[in-house]
Amino acid sequence: MATQRQTWLFSVLLLAFALFGSGCRTTHQDITTSQQYPTDYVIGDIYCTQQGLAAQRVEHSWFRSYDTFAPALSPTLLEVQSQPERWTRNYVIVPAHTFVQIKRFDLEKNDENGIFMWIRGRVTRGPLINQELMLSFISRNTGPSALRADLLLVDTNFLERTEYK
Image (cartoon, rainbow, N blue to C red; front, side, top):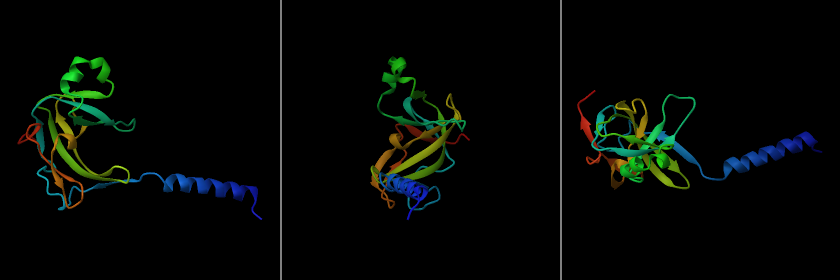
């Protein structure tokens, strides 16, 4: 005969299994050294923004010294500049001539949303120095790669490789 404590423990374990076993699963994999992703981004190289961009804060932590921002095409830079009170809480302006060093490629497999590639870099010069930028949304998508994620290449409308170190 099960004791009340055993019944309670079994109920908690069953609930935990149901919560963790269902729902979407997301895994991340750093594929920086993989040859299966033949992008023209080069780990360690510096790229310079060719125009100002609006970037949304996508990751924030109290336990690290930087945030992660994702430049995107919506809202536009003009919208963020013209209505700063609406956007400044979660958006920043990445000025033209901001220098970003490519740090890693992060392959995300998400049961609910599919497979994505995140190109991550660290700002080395400019007002957002030491912040992380995810450059995927301003990259040129050329279709699926061997990893089943879109192959992202440098879009020279937004970024240009530079010799500055």
